[in-house]
Amino acid sequence: MTTSPATARVDSIDIFRALTMFLMIFVNDFWTLKGVPQWMEHSKGSEDAMGLSDVVFPCFLFIVGLSIPFAISNRRKKGDSNGIILFHIAERTFALLLMGIYLVNLESALSSAMPVSKHVWSIAMVIAFFLIWNVYGKNDVRTTSYKILGYIILAALAVVYKGGDLENPSWMGTHWYGILGLIGWSYLICAVLYFLMKDNLPLIVAGWLFLVLFNLAAFAGMLDFLDPVRKYVWIVGSGSMPAFVMAGVTASVIYRGLGARGGLGQTYIWILIALGIAALIYGFGTRPFWGISKIRATPAWVGICSGISFLAFAFMFWLVDLKKVRSWANILKPAGTATLTCYLIPYIWYAVLALLSFSLPLFLRTGIVGLVKSLCFSLLVIIITGLINRIGIRLKI
Image (cartoon, rainbow, N blue to C red; front, side, top):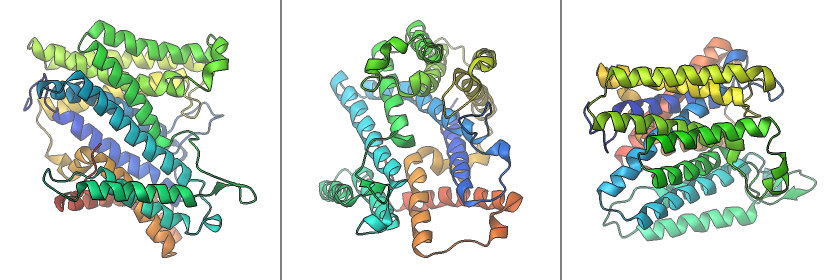
């Protein structure tokens, strides 16, 4: 290993994150294509099915969990107080929720009801995000001014926003908080749990199992008595989203424990494989009751995607950290270290193309050719991320 088990970054986590982000941009571009194979698309909520697109987000949540113990431990090592750590958790959660709310409202924005088109609104929104959460130099006197300007832009966008039904347009709402918002809530829950439990593995596993069983109980009708408070207080996704994150936390806590005892290596991989198999058994075991569905966040989806995440990380750890085979991922590196930047770039890309009324010919957006086009687009976004990082533009929350 090139890093300390106790606190430093693990190479396989960054590369796993980069690869997952590459796939996320890839599948998020499917809306521009025709003739995408059904097994690659999102399955409908009414279906007992799961496509490639339904696996990517759970893997990303799992990676969020992998990172939490290292991030919090690094802060403790640097001397941050408990108050500062909790403030950072709250600050990061706020950023993810705010961006998530704006992004989810973009989906239903009405150009004809606003003084600017939704595409201009989208570009201004992303620019505001960069102004607020860009990594500035410690001595950059413009930092505060840029951040204030970013919040002013967001406020102005909120004032002019209209969305929903053209005959009865509405203002911004939380709706489902968007992908970033779901990450934010899940991160908050699991970061606080780890903050309280630290590297106590039995407690960490108990926290993970509680979220898994909460999801199961919700589908089994055992939590119906909580319906009166559900709209006010609930665990996001009936426990499904933070369950993925907590599975990742569990994997990292096991790693840190084995590393402290000098037991890293094949033992860790076999533990990950065992956890993956157990999760798959749980997922397929609950499938006959409620089916597999990302939209409904069924127990089967939670179990199967958790199992895939454990097994995928076991392979990445073996390949990257044990066998030291990592040069293949160099081109993807920006997606693993500047993930938020990478995620937001497509919003500007799509908006600019819409304003220019530009679209590729249909034959370049259909079938295998279309899939290659989306793969190239995903790679291009990562390359652009790396280029703008070099000039000092990179979001961090």
